[in-house]
Image (cartoon, rainbow, N blue to C red; front, side, top):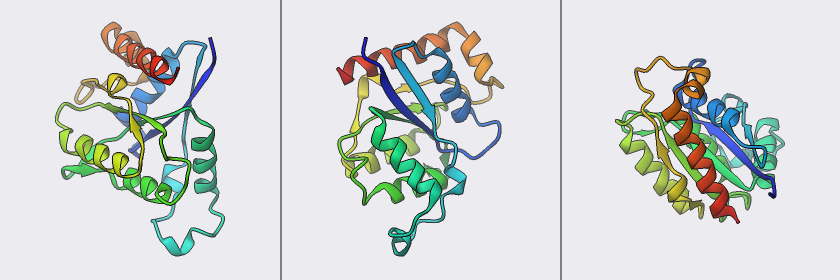
Length: 175
């Protein structure tokens, strides 16, 4: 099987984020033919300012390079005040003018059944940016209030199976 690479971004800066835990679990359950890299510099991106686009910003340069080399993007982001988290929207704003995002397959992971507004807003932004949402791989896993970390998610049979199935669906869509 051909190895596919995924870039995963959590839209949360919280140390004990369910979204980050879901991506860590996704990385752990990934079969050998799927490599998941988690972007770790979201909090280092400056606030979006088009005047800075020509400057070298290490966190942004790294994001663009990782996205360009990835076969697909996975986003797990919380909802704040019925919208996309500020850090996630900021990262997407930085990517608007680049070619790395255009036609990139994108998977959304929702960790809260109540986060419907942010998911809808993410879909709108990603579509506007010419991303290709792979609906069959998008999932919702009920982590809100579960107190599960990434190990707990991996050890929870149903949640681990849902993540694995999402990876399988994405891999099939990439072929």
